[in-house]
Image (cartoon, rainbow, N blue to C red; front, side, top):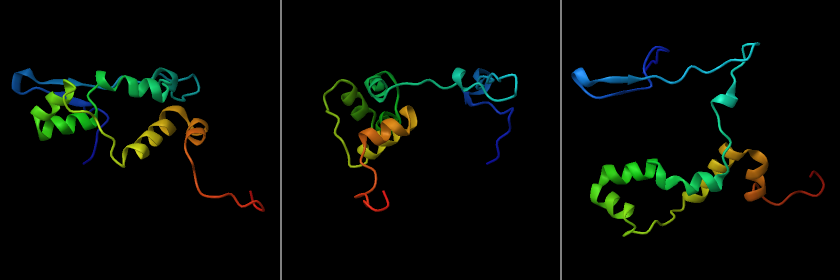
Length: 119
């Protein structure tokens, strides 16, 4: 699938009620570099995970698509969340993406034993 810069980010509705939404045009520095400060926001992992109830995550959307009743019961707190084996990997990836390598390496074990001779 090819994408065109003029294509909308998302198209919602049908027929006469169709509405296209486009991403904002990023600001640029005088030298032409993108001003990522206006696009990206630094957010600690704790804040990100604390706000997950406010957003429709991919997991919540999957629950809704597979069974709206399951989704509703989870929303009401009748079915507790449980961690799968993939969640620690996902949390580590989110920490790396959202907070950078330094925080990621401080919170996660990377690699095995360190060779004293080579460091």
